Length: 103
Image 1 (cartoon, one colour):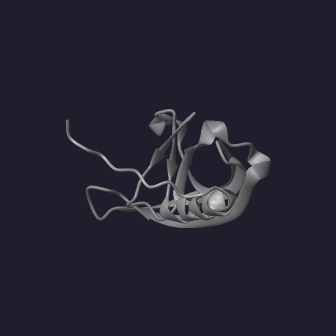
Image 2 (tube, rainbow, N blue to C red):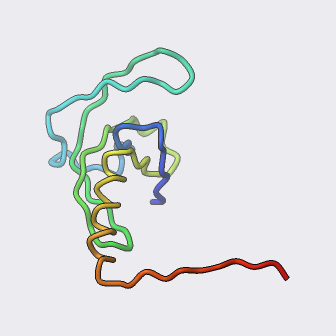
């Protein structure tokens, strides 16, 4: 499943068919739709995200299978977590200055 970064999302979103029932947390979150003020109450699941930095466990709002587009929506909280991991991993790597010139 591909990951789509949404800078306007505060929570991650995943489709039900990618989540096992035992990963459901019994929690719910209210989500506001993009184009109107309609609010929807969605269940929350604990999910594992695999990326270049390794595997990260996060919580995601679960949408119905009829809305599946094959993407995991990465919200701001998990993106900040991943960025922190990336910064800690790259602290051993020296910084390189680059200059772009015109020919």
